[in-house]
Length: 352
Ligand SMILES: [Zn+2]
Image (tube, rainbow, N blue to C red):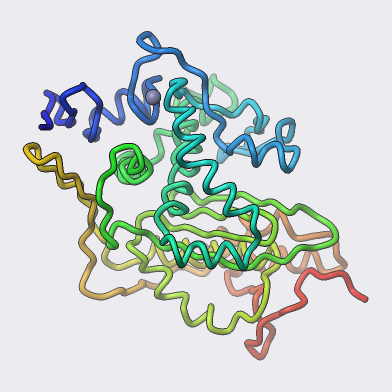
């Protein structure tokens, strides 16, 4: 038997939170310092905070002392980038979420794809939900203005918490054991990533307002759009059909921007819901899709801004670098295809 609390959350007989109401999510987790998984207060149980990017990724790529740049331009050390989590949840997450995903990444692209087919997309999708969520929960801690005299606004105030609340419900699904309906799944795209003799074998970037994120680990790249009920993935099918072979780091970032652009320009958006039966304890997360996927036109300069912001930092030293950066701003530049619309299979490879 489940019980509804005065703030419209739902708890089980042991007081364990099955469902956080939006109000409680904002008060205790987004703006409070409670455990982001179970909701426990740091006064009640031992806490050991959780890395935003999993520790195994930080260790593998020596990222602990490297800097991550936040939306306000502030740089932060990856290793100290943590959010509140109770010791028990931290342990649970490690065993039930982190380890299986890590094992999957360790096997390389081909086997990763086979396992994804066999086990379904949920584990990977929900794990990416966690990383996205943790990044944006952290934003509430960080001042938007680096100069605090300019005001007290935090980066997190800019996010729509309602949208992030859905990502939180999805990310907690391993803990609540709820049933996930296919409409609740966003766009999840796994692509082969090119291993180059120079540069990083790792990449993470996101466009928070578009709920879109890219993660590249060795030869595997995963792009997720969290709140589109797979609309962006349907629209990019045409591009995917033309891609033949592993993608360069810039091509992957471009794919991420393209999916983000589709997501923010959907004429009608899906709606998500959590359905709980207090008597039977059944809990389901589902969604309602619009009758058709329609993408509205977007201002080229806005696409250009996103391309410049996401791809610009990876454009390497090159005689044409300044020209490429300028072209990115037009919103028409592509790293994926040549003038004839053919896939650029040797993109970013050293000239022989
Ligand atoms: Zn906890």
